[in-house]
Each structure stands twice: as structure tokens, then as C-alpha cells.
Length: 186
Ligand SMILES: Cc1cc2nc3c(=O)[nH]c(=O)nc-3n(C[C@H](O)[C@H](O)[C@H](O)COP(=O)(O)O)c2cc1C
Image (cartoon, rainbow, N blue to C red; front, side, top):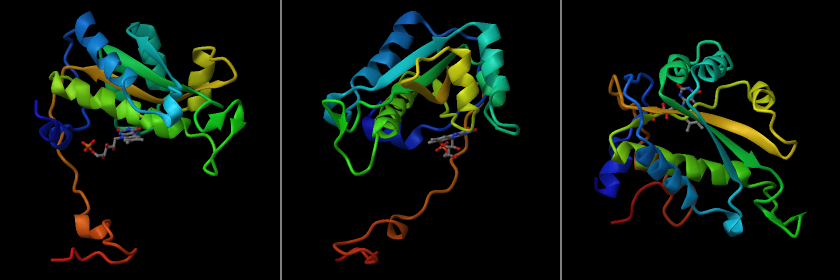
């Protein structure tokens, strides 16, 4: 699929068929995370691949009440748990080197979207799921103290296409030369 078409047509998918994700496809999707850019190439990501039904059920139980993605987490053939190592992105020789603090979540966001776009390119569906009980997920996987969970990505073949929620117009967030100058010059 052409890159811009992939970006435009990717939707959040919350219902999946029972069809398994072949290993080579899963590997290709994980490779997309591997090639994401990161702060000084620090690559803070740690990804747990969950196929076990009981663990997926536990993860669904750790979604916020009324999270629309809960069923998708329980029923997707694969759930990726996106975790990040704190204290590396934005740091030089162990010292924070950025006024913005730890860039881990930023880098993970890029890697996560690479995953979603690569999956969509291969006909699979995903959704970012961050409305979750992160502390309990950290406990579930016994994460070391410097690693935290950030989001879940259920992954599988879409059972139902997603509808595109409305987007802001460019004129609502693009500023030309000066902040507040939203009219594109001729
Ligand atoms: C950081 C992040 C967290 C999200 N968390 C959830 C979530 O917990 N549950 C859910 O159903 N969707 C979640 N979403 C999906 C958004 O609702 C969705 O991307 C947005 O409505 C736009 O729809 P689209 O992805 O189909 O373009 C999340 C998206 C992002 C980027």
C-alpha cells in the first residue's frame, strides 16, 4: 500500500476474527517498531507479545470500565504490551539532558504508530489502548523498576471496519510563520 494511503485509511479496529496472525507477519510488524526513530537512537521500547487466552482476559480486565476496546483486547489473537525503559531517552551518560524530561513515551508513540501502520499495510487491524490500569499491568508482568507499561495494541484481522471520526481542518491547527496566523498565504 502506498504510504499516504496507509496513513489516511488506518482506523482503530476493536473487533477481530479468530484468524491467527502468522509468525512471519507478526515478525514484520515487530520489525516496524525496531526501525522507529528515537531520542539519540536510545530505543527505550520493550514489547511483550501475548497470545495466551488467560493473560489476554486479565489484560481486558485491566482496561478502564467502559473502555470501547476491552472486548478487542480479550478476543484479538495477539495483544502487544508496549513498555518502555525509563531513564534512557532524553538522557546522556545517565543524566537528564532535556528540559522536557524523559522522552520515553514520545519514542514509544512513534514505535507504536509504526506497528499500527505496518499492520494496516498487511491487512490487519489494531487500536492503541491506553485507558488502562498501568500499575496493575506492570505487576502482572513483574516488570523491573525501570520499565513501565504504556499501552496495549490488540492485533488481528478486522471483523468490522472502523469509521473515521472527524478531524480538525488544517486551518484549525496549522500556523503560518506566526502562531495564530491560520490562513494559508496565497
Ligand atoms: C494514545 C492513545 C490512546 C488511546 N486509547 C484508547 C483506548 O483506551 N480505547 C479505545 O477504544 N481507543 C483508544 N484510542 C483510539 C482513539 O480513540 C482513536 O485513535 C481516535 O478516536 C481516532 O480514530 P482512528 O484511530 O480510527 O482514526 C487511543 C488512541 C491513542 C493515540
